[in-house]
Image 1: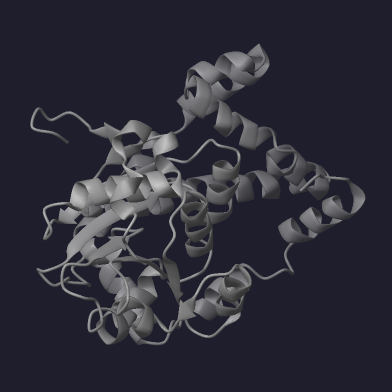
Image 2: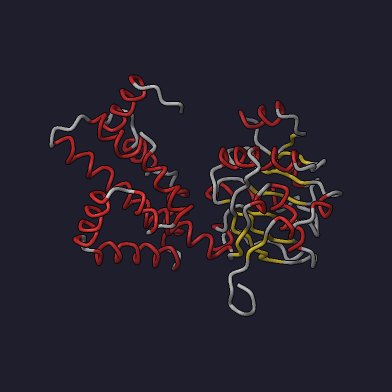
Length: 336
C-alpha cells in the first residue's frame, strides 16, 4: 500500500525495458515456471538470458530452446538478475550451497513466491536487491496468455533495495514477462505467502470435499460415475462459471444461471452451518501466520518426506473418480 493506505497497481506504461538492455538475466530452474518466463522475456527482446539448472530433462529442454545453460552455481556467478524459480521446499538448501556464494555484489534476486522470505528461511545479503514477482497463473497459461497478447496478473514487491533502482528494475522485469499487460498489484512477500497458503489450505479443501461428497452421494443414489464427473467439472461448465466470476463478479454471475439453480444454491448455502467452516479456515490462517505450518513442512523435509507415500496412495489411479474420468475421456471427444 502507498502512504495513503491505498493498494498500488502498475501497468504497461510503468515498465521500461531499456533498464534491462545491458543486464544478464539468469533463470534459475527451467521448469513449469522458468521456461515460460524465459521464453516470454526473450520474445520481449531480452538479449542476454542464461539458464541455471541441474542435468535433467529441463537442462535438455533449455538447450533445445536455444538458451545457454550452466550449473546453478555457474549461472549465478554470471548474472545481474537471478530469477529464483525452484520449488519452495528445495530452495533453502540450494540457496545456501550454490546461489548465495556465487551472486555478485549489487545483483538482484527475484522470487516467484514469498514463502522462504516470509519465514526467514532465506536471509539475503544486504548488498543485493531482493524482489518479488509472483505470477497468479500456472506456467503453461503464462506462455499461452503472452502469445495471445493478453498477459497475466502478478503480485510484486521490493523487499530490499540495495541499488536504489529496485522498483524500476522490477517493473521492467514484469513488463518483459508480460505481466504488466494485465497489471501487477503490490503485496509484500509475507502477505503473498500467507495468502497463497490460505487459499490452498482454506478454499482448496472445501472444494475437494464438496466434489468427493457429491460423488459419493451421487453414486449411492444410482447416478453413473461418468455422469457425475462430467456434470461437476469435466464438461467445462464449472471452469466457465469461475471465469465468469472473474469477468462479471462472484454474485453477479448468478444472473446467468436459471432460477432453479440460483434458488437451490441460495437455500442450500443458507442452510449450511458456516461457523465450523469459518473456524477451520481461521485455524488454517493462524497456523500459517504463526509459522506452525512452515515448521511442519520443514520437519517433513528433514525426515525424508514420510507423508509422500500417503499422498501418493491418496492420488493413486485405482479409485472410482479417476476410473470414471478415464472412461469419459475414452468415450467422448474432448478437445483437451
